[in-house]
Image (tube, rainbow, N blue to C red; front, side):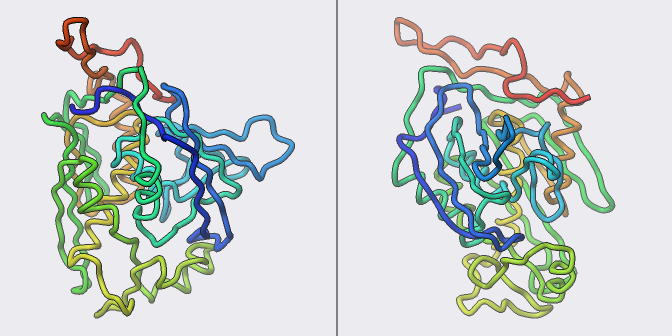
Amino acid sequence: MKQASQTTLNDTLSLTGIGVHSNAPVTIDLHPAPADTGIVFRRTDIKGQRNTSIAANWGNVSMTELCTVIGDPAKVSVATIEHLMASFAGLELDNVLIDINGPEVPIMDGSSASFVEAIDAIGLRALSAPRRYLRILKTVRIESGRGFSELRPATGGFRLEVEIDFKEAIIGRQSKMLQLTPQTFRREISRARTFGFLRDVEHLWKAGFALGSSLDNTVALDDERVLNPEGLRFADEFVRHKTLDAIGDLSLAGAPILGAYRSYCGGHKMNSAVLDALFADPSAYEFVEAPRQTVGGGRTDIRVAASPAFAADRS
């Protein structure tokens, strides 16, 4: 556990793009935030409503079809948060206030690369409060058809083992194992883009999805080849992007995970479901604080938090 203190941004930063599903222009302003704020979105385009803030945690997930949505879609919500959330988790950024003037986070190039670049440009600063972690105490597993997702105890931080298996030979069966650190996230995951098949586009458009999808933000496939002129960024870019999505979705636990995540043929729905299953069993987890420095320069033991940090109540 290397990061002992909570972090926030050194300064405010702004990014502008379009929503991959809405095709609407949107700007996000990321602001430094005090310790224990967590990640909070604030819709600045909604007038006449007292509270337009949504905390980014598992209890606020409302939809997981093609992207992750938090909040009430009929009132105040924010969609496609997973790539931005992955950048926060990957870079160990704990507290951010995000002003957003639309219902969807900009897709940028379909990966987390633009978010990482912007955050790295201004840097992070440590706060005085100790960082809190979510330690997995026993295996929790959910299954759906041939797929599954599970969280299990493990030492040494957060490890991910993600496997996908497509019938199309252009993707096929791919797997990725990763010990999550800022270095491994930047190098191995952050640039992996979202992908989709050309044959699905018309159906998605009719359903109101992927209206802003293009070769600038999506790896487009037919059954046999990649249609983007530049090709792939990695030979296994598909499973790397699924790993990116999992990092973003699982960051909604409200604290960095100490344990291991494994999935086969998973996705947003199963990432969310495994968090639901975890928090439904209080014996499966505990929240702990990073070691504190003592007066003599030594470290105290990890302490169990009095209550689940940032965990939302759910009936």
